[in-house]
Length: 98
Image (cartoon, rainbow, N blue to C red; front, side, top):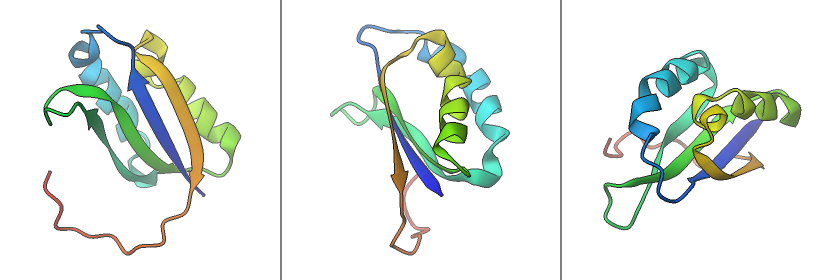
């Protein structure tokens, strides 16, 4: 089952960039489960304010374990984390900008 992770950063945190390498290394361990992943941005379209991830796990408990061990979570970057089961009903579109 797919699970969405909607994670918002704590205000006035400036250590996201310093953990990005560790974060990406952790996510790479789950690359075969990732439907999509990336930063949530402020209205300026540039400033990261959180993360949006959608990954496949066999249970909600597995999803919780994943996010509990994620480097941004472990560092205290996130103010809130919302996990919800997700069902994709639309065919993937490959032309989105990166």
